[in-house]
Amino acid sequence: MAKSVVPMLDSRLLVVNRLDCDLISERLRDRSLLTAADELAGHVAPAPHPAAVLLPLFQLDGRWRLLLIRRTEHPKDLHSGQVGFPGGRVEPIDANADAAALREAQEEIALPADQVQILGRLRKLRTVSNFLVQPVVGFIPWPQRLRAEPGEVARIFSIPLDWLAAPSRFRVEIWPRPNHPQGRRLVFFDEHDGELLWGVSARITLDLLDALGCLPIGEDPIPIHD
Image (cartoon, rainbow, N blue to C red):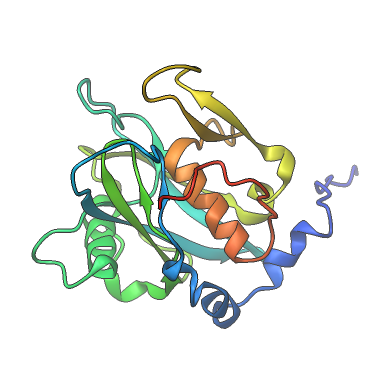
Protein backbone atom coordinates (compact mmCIF):
# COMPACT_ATOMS: atom_id res chain seq x y z
CA MET A 1 0.00 0.00 0.00
CA ALA A 2 1.41 3.40 -0.98
CA LYS A 3 2.19 5.75 1.89
CA SER A 4 0.60 9.18 1.92
CA VAL A 5 3.02 12.02 1.24
CA VAL A 6 3.13 14.72 3.91
CA PRO A 7 4.25 18.11 2.54
CA MET A 8 7.59 19.20 4.00
CA LEU A 9 7.83 22.62 5.59
CA ASP A 10 10.95 24.62 6.33
CA SER A 11 11.80 23.98 10.00
CA ARG A 12 12.04 27.74 10.55
CA LEU A 13 8.35 28.09 9.66
CA LEU A 14 7.30 25.43 12.15
CA VAL A 15 8.41 27.64 15.05
CA VAL A 16 5.04 29.39 14.92
CA ASN A 17 3.30 26.12 15.81
CA ARG A 18 5.27 25.93 19.08
CA LEU A 19 3.66 29.12 20.36
CA ASP A 20 0.95 28.95 23.01
CA CYS A 21 -1.68 31.54 23.93
CA ASP A 22 0.41 33.03 26.73
CA LEU A 23 3.41 33.56 24.46
CA ILE A 24 1.27 35.01 21.68
CA SER A 25 -0.32 37.41 24.16
CA GLU A 26 3.12 38.44 25.43
CA ARG A 27 4.36 39.15 21.91
CA LEU A 28 1.27 41.24 21.16
CA ARG A 29 1.45 43.22 24.42
CA ASP A 30 2.89 46.46 23.04
CA ARG A 31 2.00 46.03 19.39
CA SER A 32 -1.04 48.33 19.45
CA LEU A 33 1.14 51.17 20.78
CA LEU A 34 3.03 51.39 17.49
CA THR A 35 2.29 54.30 15.17
CA ALA A 36 -0.61 53.50 12.85
CA ALA A 37 0.17 52.42 9.31
CA ASP A 38 -1.43 54.43 6.51
CA GLU A 39 -2.41 53.24 3.02
CA LEU A 40 -2.22 56.79 1.67
CA ALA A 41 0.38 58.52 3.81
CA GLY A 42 0.65 62.23 3.09
CA HIS A 43 -2.88 62.58 1.67
CA VAL A 44 -5.17 65.05 3.41
CA ALA A 45 -8.34 63.38 4.71
CA PRO A 46 -10.99 64.05 7.35
CA ALA A 47 -10.88 62.21 10.65
CA PRO A 48 -11.13 58.48 9.90
CA HIS A 49 -14.04 56.29 11.01
CA PRO A 50 -13.05 53.85 13.78
CA ALA A 51 -13.38 50.18 12.85
CA ALA A 52 -12.26 46.83 14.23
CA VAL A 53 -11.65 43.35 12.86
CA LEU A 54 -11.21 40.04 14.67
CA LEU A 55 -8.33 37.72 13.77
CA PRO A 56 -9.49 34.35 15.16
CA LEU A 57 -6.68 31.82 15.71
CA PHE A 58 -7.21 28.14 16.39
CA GLN A 59 -5.17 24.95 16.45
CA LEU A 60 -5.85 21.90 14.30
CA ASP A 61 -3.57 18.86 13.98
CA GLY A 62 -0.76 20.69 15.76
CA ARG A 63 -0.83 23.74 13.48
CA TRP A 64 -2.06 27.27 14.14
CA ARG A 65 -4.63 28.41 11.61
CA LEU A 66 -6.06 31.86 10.88
CA LEU A 67 -9.81 32.10 10.28
CA LEU A 68 -10.90 34.29 7.36
CA ILE A 69 -14.04 35.08 5.41
CA ARG A 70 -14.88 35.91 1.82
CA ARG A 71 -17.49 38.64 1.63
CA THR A 72 -20.71 38.28 -0.33
CA GLU A 73 -20.83 39.88 -3.78
CA HIS A 74 -22.68 43.21 -3.86
CA PRO A 75 -22.54 45.39 -7.02
CA LYS A 76 -21.87 48.73 -5.28
CA ASP A 77 -19.70 47.49 -2.40
CA LEU A 78 -15.98 48.27 -2.76
CA HIS A 79 -15.10 45.25 -0.60
CA SER A 80 -17.54 42.91 -2.34
CA GLY A 81 -16.17 39.41 -2.81
CA GLN A 82 -12.91 40.16 -1.00
CA VAL A 83 -11.18 37.96 1.54
CA GLY A 84 -10.81 39.45 4.99
CA PHE A 85 -11.70 39.18 8.66
CA PRO A 86 -15.01 39.52 10.48
CA GLY A 87 -15.40 43.15 11.48
CA GLY A 88 -16.79 46.57 10.76
CA ARG A 89 -17.41 50.02 12.21
CA VAL A 90 -17.08 50.69 15.92
CA GLU A 91 -20.61 51.70 16.90
CA PRO A 92 -21.76 53.83 19.87
CA ILE A 93 -23.03 50.67 21.58
CA ASP A 94 -19.52 49.19 21.59
CA ALA A 95 -17.46 49.72 24.74
CA ASN A 96 -14.24 49.54 22.71
CA ALA A 97 -12.64 48.01 19.62
CA ASP A 98 -12.59 44.55 21.21
CA ALA A 99 -16.35 44.71 21.77
CA ALA A 100 -16.92 45.87 18.20
CA ALA A 101 -14.83 43.03 16.75
CA LEU A 102 -16.66 40.46 18.88
CA ARG A 103 -20.07 41.86 17.98
CA GLU A 104 -19.29 41.80 14.27
CA ALA A 105 -17.98 38.23 14.48
CA GLN A 106 -21.20 37.17 16.19
CA GLU A 107 -23.29 38.88 13.51
CA GLU A 108 -21.28 37.74 10.50
CA ILE A 109 -20.22 34.17 11.34
CA ALA A 110 -22.22 33.32 14.50
CA LEU A 111 -19.08 33.13 16.64
CA PRO A 112 -20.17 33.57 20.28
CA ALA A 113 -18.20 36.22 22.15
CA ASP A 114 -17.73 33.86 25.10
CA GLN A 115 -15.83 31.49 22.81
CA VAL A 116 -13.13 34.08 22.10
CA GLN A 117 -10.11 34.64 24.33
CA ILE A 118 -8.69 38.05 23.43
CA LEU A 119 -4.90 37.73 23.12
CA GLY A 120 -4.06 41.30 22.14
CA ARG A 121 -4.11 43.91 19.41
CA LEU A 122 -1.98 44.82 16.44
CA ARG A 123 -1.18 48.37 15.38
CA LYS A 124 -3.98 50.32 13.74
CA LEU A 125 -4.15 50.88 10.01
CA ARG A 126 -5.83 53.73 8.10
CA THR A 127 -7.35 52.52 4.85
CA VAL A 128 -7.86 54.26 1.53
CA SER A 129 -11.60 54.30 2.36
CA ASN A 130 -10.70 56.36 5.48
CA PHE A 131 -11.31 53.78 8.20
CA LEU A 132 -8.90 53.49 11.10
CA VAL A 133 -8.93 49.73 11.62
CA GLN A 134 -7.98 48.16 14.95
CA PRO A 135 -7.05 44.46 14.47
CA VAL A 136 -7.94 42.35 17.51
CA VAL A 137 -6.36 38.90 17.88
CA GLY A 138 -8.29 36.14 19.63
CA PHE A 139 -8.02 32.43 20.32
CA ILE A 140 -11.02 30.18 19.70
CA PRO A 141 -11.44 26.51 20.66
CA TRP A 142 -11.93 24.22 17.67
CA PRO A 143 -14.26 23.01 16.26
CA GLN A 144 -16.89 25.76 16.26
CA ARG A 145 -20.46 25.70 14.94
CA LEU A 146 -20.01 28.72 12.68
CA ARG A 147 -22.65 29.98 10.26
CA ALA A 148 -22.13 32.58 7.57
CA GLU A 149 -24.62 35.46 7.44
CA PRO A 150 -25.47 35.16 3.71
CA GLY A 151 -26.00 38.88 3.21
CA GLU A 152 -22.43 39.58 4.34
CA VAL A 153 -20.35 36.42 4.16
CA ALA A 154 -20.08 33.94 1.28
CA ARG A 155 -17.54 31.57 2.82
CA ILE A 156 -15.68 30.87 6.07
CA PHE A 157 -12.29 29.20 5.76
CA SER A 158 -8.82 29.12 7.30
CA ILE A 159 -5.14 29.13 6.31
CA PRO A 160 -2.24 27.68 8.32
CA LEU A 161 0.07 30.32 9.78
CA ASP A 162 3.16 28.35 8.75
CA TRP A 163 1.95 28.46 5.13
CA LEU A 164 1.43 32.23 5.32
CA ALA A 165 4.82 32.77 6.96
CA ALA A 166 6.85 31.53 3.97
CA PRO A 167 8.42 34.64 2.33
CA SER A 168 7.71 33.21 -1.11
CA ARG A 169 3.98 33.23 -0.39
CA PHE A 170 3.46 36.97 -0.87
CA ARG A 171 4.50 39.82 -3.11
CA VAL A 172 4.10 43.61 -3.07
CA GLU A 173 2.66 45.46 -6.08
CA ILE A 174 1.71 49.05 -6.91
CA TRP A 175 -2.09 48.99 -7.19
CA PRO A 176 -4.16 49.84 -9.14
CA ARG A 177 -1.17 51.10 -11.19
CA PRO A 178 1.83 53.42 -10.93
CA ASN A 179 1.04 57.17 -11.16
CA HIS A 180 -2.60 56.57 -10.22
CA PRO A 181 -3.89 59.19 -7.70
CA GLN A 182 -4.53 56.36 -5.23
CA GLY A 183 -1.60 54.20 -6.34
CA ARG A 184 -0.19 52.40 -3.31
CA ARG A 185 1.87 49.38 -2.40
CA LEU A 186 -0.37 46.41 -1.63
CA VAL A 187 0.42 42.92 -0.38
CA PHE A 188 -0.84 39.90 -2.34
CA PHE A 189 -0.56 36.35 -1.01
CA ASP A 190 -0.55 33.32 -3.28
CA GLU A 191 -3.92 31.71 -3.82
CA HIS A 192 -4.84 29.14 -1.16
CA ASP A 193 -7.75 26.74 -1.58
CA GLY A 194 -9.20 28.97 -4.30
CA GLU A 195 -9.05 32.13 -2.15
CA LEU A 196 -6.87 35.23 -2.63
CA LEU A 197 -5.79 37.19 0.45
CA TRP A 198 -4.66 40.69 -0.53
CA GLY A 199 -4.83 44.38 0.38
CA VAL A 200 -5.48 45.60 3.90
CA SER A 201 -6.26 42.11 5.24
CA ALA A 202 -3.00 40.78 3.80
CA ARG A 203 -1.07 43.65 5.40
CA ILE A 204 -2.71 42.95 8.76
CA THR A 205 -1.74 39.29 8.35
CA LEU A 206 1.90 40.29 7.80
CA ASP A 207 1.76 42.46 10.91
CA LEU A 208 0.49 39.46 12.87
CA LEU A 209 3.26 37.19 11.58
CA ASP A 210 5.86 39.85 12.29
CA ALA A 211 4.55 40.32 15.84
CA LEU A 212 4.78 36.57 16.42
CA GLY A 213 8.41 36.62 15.34
CA CYS A 214 8.03 34.30 12.39
CA LEU A 215 8.35 36.69 9.47
CA PRO A 216 11.02 39.35 8.87
CA ILE A 217 9.00 41.85 6.87
CA GLY A 218 11.92 44.14 6.06
CA GLU A 219 10.68 47.25 4.24
CA ASP A 220 7.17 48.11 5.31
CA PRO A 221 4.76 47.72 2.35
CA ILE A 222 2.61 50.47 3.85
CA PRO A 223 4.36 53.69 4.93
CA ILE A 224 4.13 54.77 8.55
CA HIS A 225 1.70 57.65 9.10
CA ASP A 226 3.27 60.65 10.88
